[in-house]
Length: 205
Image (cartoon, rainbow, N blue to C red; front, side, top):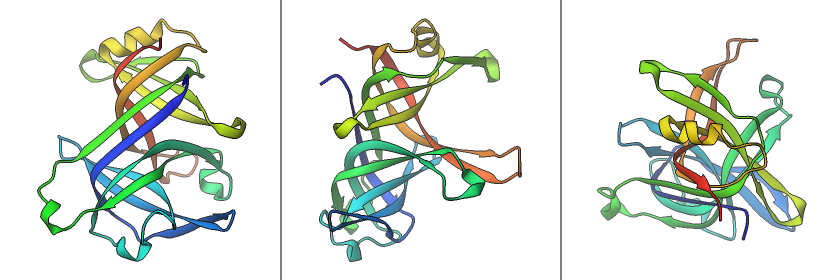
């Protein structure tokens, strides 16, 4: 398989009630916002799309912990004018497990593995203490001619390595799915986006 994304979230805290998204082939899909802690204590906010056939949605409530397996999918939001053409990144759940009270001491996990193709020019900059930061995007092909376009950031040695790779390079990435806030210049609205922060990037075999 030349292209895929795999996500594993463990001990993710449900932050919102299930909200209806769409009905496809008589199957209803809902989205739920979850929070996953980093070692630093910062909480990443991630949207998960869940089929009604996967779990009893009445058992998903704010404050409950869940484990989620799935893949990363993306789309451009054109309904809300304040976020027009903003890329929306979410996890499409293939499996979800509801944790009970005995799991409250469980460790958090936010693991992402991507195999895909660099599809945007690599942008480099220096941040605090002179650390190099690279940003780009990876295309992951799906069935029926669809693709996910996943924002990617890399630090230090990984940033310098990807700088020498061109658009179209086939790569494998290991990292985490994180959230980041920023302010829109045009209206000063606070926005939150999702992207993959890479721990390692290498050429795919």
